Image (tube, rainbow, N blue to C red; front, side, top):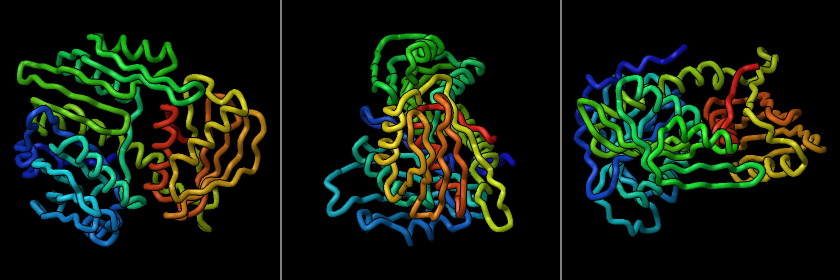
Length: 352
């Protein structure tokens, strides 16, 4: 099922508050989307599992009704947060669906602390990442809605084989930019655009880590242009791929998914070793056992110690990885694993 996000619509009370959040100086407003384990009350999660690093942090409820929670977060990093910041950080949460939206007009350094704060809540809260092609689709949808887009700067990246990063400041058509990236085996990691219609002018930056920054626009506009589309698409992935994959006594049949890219990325033993090194670097409190590792082939068992989730990882061709969920798999843990593949290889996921 695809989640309906009726209580996140601009007619709701939270949007009037979020629209009043303004950027100041040269600091844009930043927003980021999360999925959470909505079997639990979000405030109980925040209170009970707060990291010792952020023990002096607090929140105040602004809206708390049947469907929606909006809180004002005061995030303080210990032992003593040296940052003085006049910005606000708001967190909009659905009580009926597994989504939360962070909105902040704090400095970039302070926002880094905020991301750390939320990362500490894994495995109950996890970020939503974007693929490069999903960013392209979002930009195409803006043009279809008669918005004029001008690319101002961008970052192209590749992590596998030979690491490469290109930063550009030229004015370029966004479709041309994505083609250049594809032709050079790169992905668009971040892009900043000027956007204008008959009703507004503004600046937007989107990156693959799910962060959207904007200036000259209000939250309602950003929601209708980008956030609503991201959540709608993610909700389908959540229901089709991430949930009910765990093997149990009543459900012994494995339900694998396939992660694939359009190019050959596992051609040698060195590529496999780089993959294992990336796993080791990216996954804290996870472990893995290698059952077979020869040439460009790999069979490994990956275990998330925090949730108890486990997965078989099979690499048997140069352009695809099979992920077979085993026992106690949660959607949050599965989301973290899929994010790893998206972050490092920018491919697609489908059920097998």
